[in-house]
Amino acid sequence: MLTVKAFHVIFMVTWFAGLFYLPRLFVYHCELSSPAERARFELMERRLFVMMTIGASGTALFGLWLLVDYAWQAYAKSGWLHLKLTLVLLLLGYHVYLWRLMRELAVRPGIHSGRFYRWINEIPSLFLVVIVLLAVTKPF
Image (tube, rainbow, N blue to C red):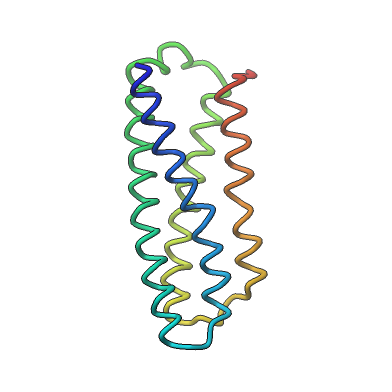
C-alpha cells in the first residue's frame, strides 16, 4: 500500500507543478505582441496542460485505489476525508477552468490582464496547504 501512496504523491506533485506554472505562462503570454512568440507560448501551454492532466489522472487513479482498498474503511466517517475529497473535486474544476483560459487566451490574448493571471496563479497554493494539512493531521 505504501507504493500506491508514493505514486499518488508523485502524480500529485506533477499535477501541482503544472497548476503552479501554467498561469505563470499565461502572464507572459498575454503580454506578448509577436505572433511567433504567442505561437511558442501556446505550444508550451498545451504541452504543459497534457503533462498536468496526466498528473491529475494519476493522482485520481492512485487516490481512488487508496480510497477503495484502505482509506474508506478506516476513515469513512471522518470529516477531514470528505473535506479533502471535496477540495480535490474543486481543484479538478480549477484544472478545467485553466483549460478554458488557455483556449480563450489563444483566440483573444488581451481579454485578461497579467494581474488577473497572477491572482489566478495563487489559487492552487491555498488548495495545496489545506489538502496536505488535512491528509497529515486528520483533524476531525
